Amino acid sequence: MPAVSAMTALLEFASVSKRFGRRTVLADVNLSVARGEAVGLVGINGAGKTTLIRALLDLGRIDGGHISIAGRAHTATAARAHLAYLAERFSPPWFATGFELLRHLCALQGVAFDGAAARAEAAGLDLDVEALDRPTREYSKGMAQKLGLIAAILPGCPLLVLDEPMSGLDPKARALIKRRLLALRASGTTLFFSTHLLPDVEALCDRVAVLHAGRIVWQGAPESMLTHYRARDLETAFLTAIDSDA
Image (tube, rainbow, N blue to C red; front, side):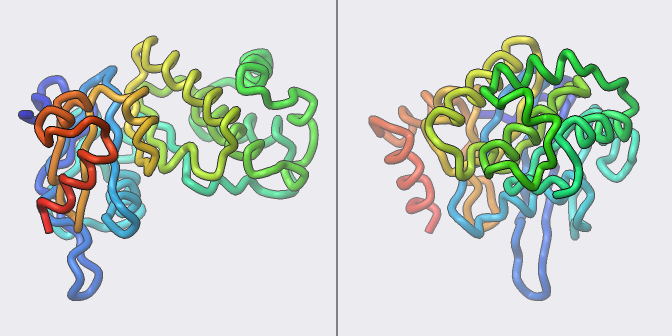
């Protein structure tokens, strides 16, 4: 499937490459994400998914190509104001309460903290609202991940960048977070996230991009991927895609 037109892209990776010493981690990565689109980045461990996301956030220098957000270079602080980010292992400062952290992160984004909205998000994700008054050192992994998602949602950024957002979550937490992401997508929020969970890609994404050995070996609609690889499910299609690239 052809890449999204740069005229409509909110996020664009163009011929991005990254090396660590002699090892090439990203090789000529081309991928665009249109406004309002949900794109899942899938690949095995070590494929380069987190490296690509860290490059987008300007947490690691790229060796070639360029990345743009809303038409501006990703290295410009103002360009990154368009996005909110949730790390795979969201680790809030142990001494802060949930409310203190949310208030601080909204301030960093230049957005007024809305306590009622925070409570509503917590209730929707089945995070005990009273827990927001407690230090995050008392939070479980799932509670912390929900808090991280709330922190990403509250500023109202047009682009959410999520690195393995469902990692380590129980089935109920996954279902609730998936429901919230679907609602955000329906409201026009652009989603770009990495995942190992192919059923989540099928449920959430307009397009899937398969990153293997640092290269995009497939991108297109999930149903197109099934047709292309003559597979009944995404797992089989994914395995065929990376085996074909071997």
